[in-house]
Length: 368
Image (cartoon, rainbow, N blue to C red; front, side):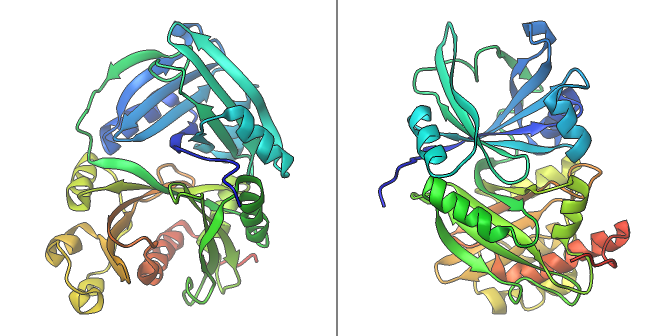
């Protein structure tokens, strides 16, 4: 099949939050992002305020509604803080919109042009799982800081950051029985293919389980895993997410680094909380995963997980949820040839998440 919806890269992820100024400060101080641009009352934006954060090739946009009836405000009331838009840079937003909607996607924003002294920015969008939008962006004729209406900022500049380089993958949680529908959606409307499938035998503990399919674009640049809950004795992490997010949405974002030890050390020092890993995980670790470049003692100190597959190995670690609702969290990942998602760590990860669910009083009640 020809690549009817070519994608260059992740352009940005847009968060809808209750207080964009405070959220921007959090991601700047704790995650090492630079606040690069701003749009708000001072720039004559009367309905919303937005901050553009950058680090490496990663761009986050944090937006808040300035009035209770604004759609962003309503989204935050329903979902809490979360990622509402996955923006993908494409060569042609008109073609991307026409090809995807012709194949069954529901349009959200028809092809639109925004212009200022820096050129023309083109964009369009379609609906995806839950209230999430997939936005198509064409920057080929735009040289501004982000988009018309935004002004450059250099607040709390941390140009070095903490070493986060790129968005590795973006994971969604959907309702029981909906995973197949959304994998077909990405395959049929955007030309994605199935990279890997994990069933509940691979991702389970005594108490809970989930199933997952990883969809990727034709180049392998964009990876969008999709999870759904599976039957278990207790309430799975997916069910907990769906309950508190009030529907399907983005569960976590994996950000790649070239030195996970340095990145996690800085993030911990800045106050980021990660899931804990028992010391027993590191006993005989090298016998299980082979020779690795980092000292095991340092990995154990930081709680970093290791997994090896045919093509190499990877390091990974997961934050606690970054808001009071047990919804959105982040993964930090360093790859050494491995292209998987840490299947060997699923059991350890689940146990760690279930410890946190128990503290929140959410593990014991099964609803599936």
